[in-house]
Image (cartoon, rainbow, N blue to C red; front, side, top):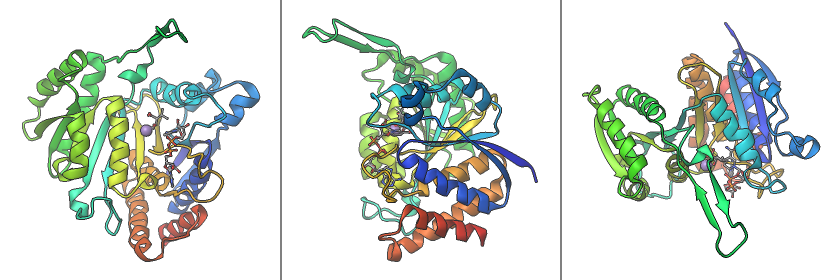
Length: 346
Ligand code: NAD
Ligand code: IPM
Ligand code: MN
């Protein structure tokens, strides 16, 4: 079959550890993969001052997909690697869909005691290139008692419509066919108005999709009290960031949450990564759960049209998760990776 050309950015902290396991599983799938590793992250920044050189960005455009661990390190000021490396990749490669499934696998413990897998099975379509993440803003009288800091949210008709359309298509393809817009239209009247009008207008083309609206504060509550309300959610970049950490928590923990930064138009490679960060508190100890990265590899395979291979990886994870009920305690990052790899290899 075809050869996948994959760029790998392990990044910082546990990013390096979990990506190692993700690649192990990918190799066991049997698809031919040619990987090139890029040493972007804290170490390179300290050594050269570089975050994402233009030449590297251009090279990355030539791959079929990118697998990323996590970036961010306590030795680097907040925002340097996050903005100039991670967000720059999402923006430059036009990852306007940040796809984040929130799915409770059978046998996984959830803080919502009574919840069953059928109660927690949603997909958050988080906008990936706009909103407050666009980065405009500034500080006046910085450092004085009269400082004023602004951080603007950018919402374009073009950007909102394309992600809303994607979400409707996603909802249409799922059995429940329900799509919820999550925003804060009662306070963010300009941005919320654009989102709501766009959502309502596009919905006219999707009479088979049941639509709903929820303010983000209430949605946060319903994630915990009634997760079964949600099927597909479409929301702004920042709301989606926060909601998907809650989503991760209710579906068994941040160590299981996968994501794809998707360019649906395929004008550039999509990038797959766990929802979690570099976890400096446990880095280098072999304690990180690689499952989120392994599930992100499944999303990557699916994106590249390898549905059967993706399903095999997801099934291997599902089987491993069932067994964790009894034998999970104390397994290292490598051991979990090895166990899932063995299942994939058959
Ligand atoms: P984090 O996700 O790194 O960690 C939050 C908590 O979850 C920590 O206690 C950590 O130990 C735990 N955790 C995370 N992943 C885990 C895993 N796979 N297995 C077990 N436990 C896990 O979030 P944070 O502490 O807010 O951020 C740390 C750094 O990571 C910051 O620099 C932040 O900017 C960055 N970050 C990067 C990404 C990314 O690259 N996509 C995402 C989030 C945060
Ligand atoms: C995530 C992270 C990033 C985000 C940060 C590190 C820029 O929290 O991938 O969820 O906010 O998108
Ligand atoms: Mn986040």
